Amino acid sequence: GQNIDQPTEMTATEGAIVQINCTYQTSGFNGLFWYQQHAGEAPTFLSYNVLDGLEEKGRFSSFLSRSKGYSYLLLKELQMKDSASYLCAVRASDRGSTLGRLYFGRGTQLTVWP
Amino acid sequence: DAGVTQSPTHLIKTRGQHVTLRCSPISGHKSVSWYQQVLGQGPQFIFQYYEKEERGRGNFPDRFSARQFPNYSSELNVNALLLGDSALYLCASSHHHPEAFFGQGTRLTVV
Image: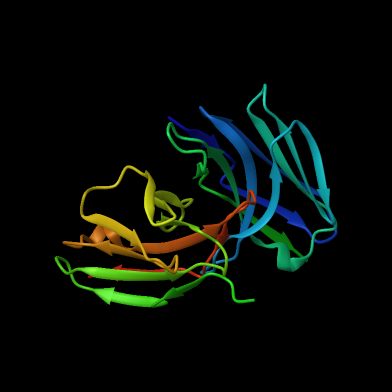
């Protein structure tokens, strides 16, 4: 089966840096994704890692270690609008299908205070 | 370019009824997946379709079914609704790139 674990809640102040960790146990690993989801809205894609290392995209960076089953999302220069749920998702390929499905964690609710 | 569109946006049904949710993928995307998101949890995979064929099914009862049409749009059907089916139902489309793009979702409330 698939098991994805991330903290339930985090808080930080405007301008700060926050790191959201995600650990996973999965078979058929085929990539790790981070999505941002504001309340009542659809998840929006933030980042994708399939090889070990750091991917940087503006204020957001994501890191992956496949041997440790570990990823983190780093948010810099936090803004109020960054208050949202951050979902860690693993894509796993099933037997007979190369497309893969996404397995999501419960999400980390980040609150940014002024 | 239009993103993934879902209809309706909100729906209220009573227990035992049937519901059909609709999804139009991004133009050119041939894969559509359905997810159920209960409040406070991450989305859970229900179905994946590619080129009108079912390519994956999550751990959901047979009351849940889906299909994909020649224009790659998709329907999710749920029979004999239960209170526990109340959730946000998300459709995602993808094609030859790693990320899946989600629609705004259908908020289903079963009373």
